[in-house]
Image 1 (cartoon, rainbow over the protein chains, first blue to last red):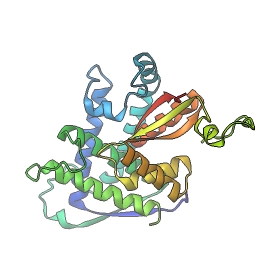
Image 2 (cartoon, rainbow over the protein chains, first blue to last red; image 1 turned 90 degrees about the horizontal axis):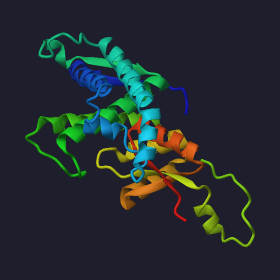
Image 3 (cartoon, each protein chain N blue to C red; image 1 turned 90 degrees about the vertical axis):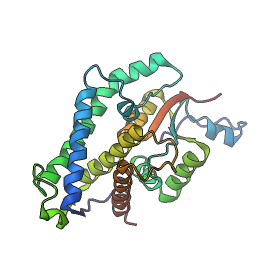
Image 4 (cartoon, each protein chain N blue to C red; image 1 turned 135 degrees about the horizontal axis):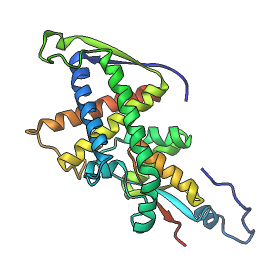
Length: 164
Length: 98
């Protein structure tokens, strides 16, 4: 992969809301370190590697899960830091700055973190929504709008990353 | 991907040899969430596949429900599965069918 940089343009409202999602994601990851590790969204992020062999699955999980969630956390914190540079995360999103444009420059490591985190946020939201089919949709549930917006941003970054 | 190995016996059918490059497999399963474009990106970036090959593999996952993305030693398959999990893909490890 080339070492090009990608400029991602967001509105400040998008940056604000995304940072809220990333913060919630970080809380989920922190909770998952404790005994409440049965959250299905976390289970989706760290799937059973050996579905037909519980013993091997447990061993794999013991060895890999902590590191996997730590990498998730590092990625999410990288996004949060970049978003914090764009917008005041503690401000009121209804303030008139909401229409302003903001740009983030992503180096390849940033891009990796953004792609993985946007994909992970979609997995978590899909688990919460109970999405089992690509056509599942409920126009009355605003979480679908967030889910689809994340997909739109992810797809844009993928195409920018692969030069298409 | 670990396709190098002992040379096949000359009386073995080549397609069978290709099916059995290793005793273990990493399998990626279809899910309703990951975008097709993202899955192609992952296969290109991680395995270094061409766009064509990555797309073929993604379509196999999408249409058949799953696809074998790597074969070889168990430890190697575990590394691949971890990498797939890092990307959010649903990957499992299994013994290659006899």
